[in-house]
Image (cartoon, rainbow, N blue to C red; front, top):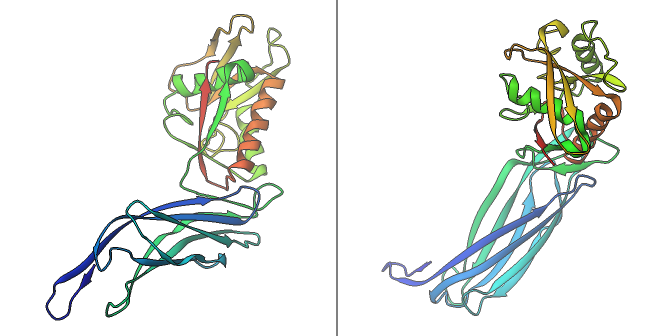
Length: 299
């Protein structure tokens, strides 16, 4: 808006819409920013405003290219000018958080002052880059809670066992409340040993029987992390019929109040879930205590 001084008469107005699209990669530290500015309406001396867009990412991020566009004129309503900026993170044995600040300068020839500047920001903790997960450094939006997606057709008895733990036990770990990653491998192994202890006895009616604990040993919701042991857990035999797709479970020990589960699962299915969890950890860059959900789908 341009106002005449000292009369206060409005000489012109302009309404601009802003659309951000920021692209992160889980396998590199470049952050691509595409910001579109659209003229929604204008009048008077701001009928055809001229705009310049620039940006900067917050420390410790580095700005590689901060100029989106320079002195672009809007000649009609609905016209859009696109700005493309590039930022780069450089974490070293850590996770860095940062946001982005934008500056839009609008010029009107003959106005006093001849230009107006607006500034807005994406919060300083919106983006996170680290070199702590996988063989590559990368970036994510940490507020997003990813889902480990499992299916009964692929993960079979392991998926069924997890579904039992989510639906039949009171906490709903991974379903109604997220699991949180435990990055300490030694602590995770200790959790596994507490739950899959001598109370678990392999069965001859389950091929390659293995103890599949839920919640996962590598979470802070594991029964071992909660101070429980195998005797405190429900124990079930998940079943899956590959011919019909039907699934069910046979309870061995279950009151419905337990906070952990021992499931008799063929070792290949147990390992497959573990491998997929490791892949999710890498692709979503899950750090210690980061939350995620587990979805089990019947197909």
